[in-house]
Image 1: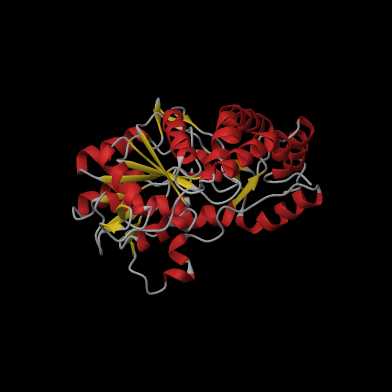
Image 2: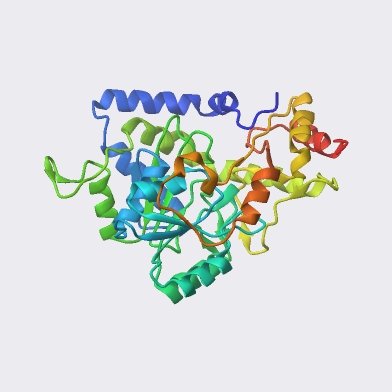
Length: 370
């Protein structure tokens, strides 16, 4: 089976480094918020090109902490996408905010022109949470212009896009804060749940460190109501020793695979992801889009050739049952988001694919009767 992610192959590469990290952490006798976390935070910040990284328990908590650090108050509106993992919206709700949805563009990223129109109509909207979907960045020049023109408070969701850039600007550097996830399937994935908040603001970073640890300013002195969401020493050591040093290599491999797919998948019923010339995608996923009525048949066709695929995402966020009765708002009907949710299928794109497997995926696509 050609898998979406092959953790067994990954382990064959990282296993010795993980074992060394485990031995070091175990022998240290210190397992929570120690030198390993600080060391990884410094390395991550340097890799990202920002001043501060704050390790937390997962990407959703990083989003919530980012919003709270920017002053999100109960009932505050947060402009965001209807097409993403549900965690993006759940973080807004947990922080007390009201998700306000517009539509997405043909790439699945937040439609920033619709955002501009929404902000012109409603000047009470101060917060924006864009998602860099599939590893493909939103237009960061337009995002910077929105921030400037409307004095926005922005937390970028970079969970799928570490290393992505637009017109020379790295994702996560336009907003005041950014959040990422180290869930195992991510381009930089831990061996469990983990995440981080990124920022150039020292005061914001300091508050984030307080919020992640019960709201403690010092031990047993709680200045505010925080969370229990600490990156542990073991995951930090594994990320630092075994995974972060290989991220550039693995990202380059993903890019090579995506380039091959984009050059050789040639089928009239298969649409590829539109990527702007100024965008540098890191290809967390490789989505293709087929007619909605044919998606199930296409997926079964690939499965018959032992090609594992995924759907990201089958239901738009405003239609999720969990939002019934929740304080949310749709400013426009998310037509594009709904269409993409009905048509998208993700092909394997992980860095451990062999040349033969890549050829098999291409052949499986091109030989589909359609």
